[in-house]
Each structure stands twice: as structure tokens, then as C-alpha cells.
Length: 69
Image (cartoon, rainbow, N blue to C red; front, side, top):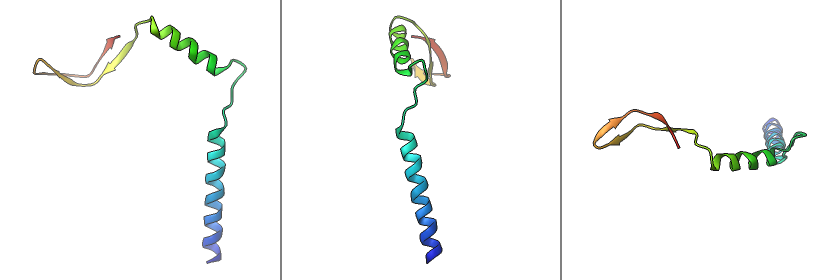
């Protein structure tokens, strides 16, 4: 009983530590938030390749492929 309680307590502590670590955000000297804003601005006016999974077009099966969007 005592061993089961200790193992359960260790599991709860490790889960709490991992949840606390996931909640914290570590920014480098170059802020990641600013970079993500710049990337979204760039992607609005910039075509890039997107993976299109297999689908049917005009009744025929088309394999997965990349397309510019």
C-alpha cells in the first residue's frame, strides 16, 4: 500500500512538473512572436507549395501532389 502511494505521488509530481514546463514560454533574444507576425505578413502575398492529398478529379483518382497556392 505504501509503495503504491509513493509511486502514485511520484507520478503526480512528474505530471505537474511537465505541465508547468509546458506552460512557460522561453523567448530567445530575437522574439519569436515578432518573427511569426513577419512570416504571416510575408505569406499573405507570397505563393508557396502546399501538399494536396489524393483525391478524385472528374471521376479519376489523382495521386497526392504539391501545388502552388
